[in-house]
Amino acid sequence: MTTTQRTPWALVDRTDLVPLCPHCDAQLDEIYRRGTGFPLGQGRTLVYFCPRCHKVLGFAQGRVL
Image (cartoon, rainbow, N blue to C red):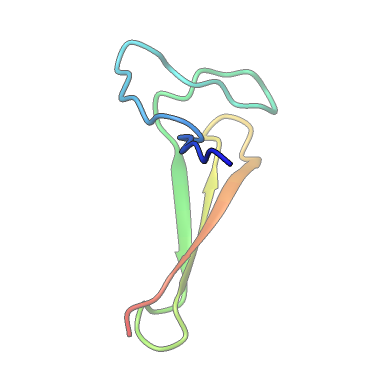
């Protein structure tokens, strides 16, 4: 039985491309974020959203232990 290692994807830095908002199709030259909480203990929750239509692009949560 042969085992092959596969890389699921490669991360490539591209400065020549500008991502598009999946909601309004605006070019995302910048992305807004808003956070709640304090990073110690319970953690900080961040929401990322489009500066044009203000629809949510994603969430992140970070903690410092």
